Image 1: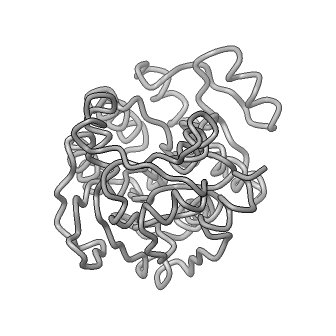
Image 2: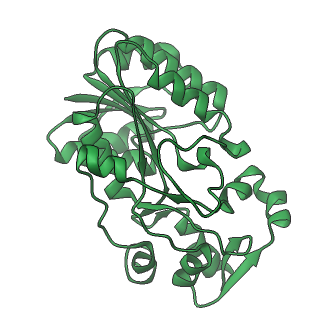
Length: 284
């Protein structure tokens, strides 16, 4: 397949691009600068000049593809919603796949219970716009539309876990928001990329999947793996710097990905976030 991929130079999108290329597919990546285009060419990805705020470019690239994976975001709900609508319209009545990347923060706090894909959404303010986009994707006619909600993504030395390493190097302590007693549902970025590939090839239209590895580490435990010394950042203080992002970081969530395992045969068996922080990509 020739897949049009947004976010191809990003964290999740970069891993998805690698998985697609390993699977023998060709990738066209959205490139908003000459530097981004250069980086894509270096990975044997065809750059397509444009950005998420250029509807004509998105429509053209989507129509020319065999399928679309939307792994990029501007973090602006209005812009992202408009971009997704344009790409869906370009694929309308084609039966081609479009995979939309959402996230588990749309679930809100799960209160110690395990949430599956039937759990009612209760998004934190930071991602309050995402459920509407999810529904727009899932309801699209004539498109094999799929929504994936990744957990907190780690691996390759990136993601939120890298912030613990950064604060430890700068201040001597891995700093976390809140008490550190809350749980983060996690997924390694390479395991996540493998789910995108499976969903692209075999997921039914209108499918929604959570992507987590089944671990239930507390945030304080994760910080301790990054540094022998840790430090709590009170939520009220963190909000002054991080805004709504702070409220997302203190969510206590337990999330099941059994549907992805039973429907697509997906497994998430890579290195744990604890081991990766201590001896893996973050330590390197």
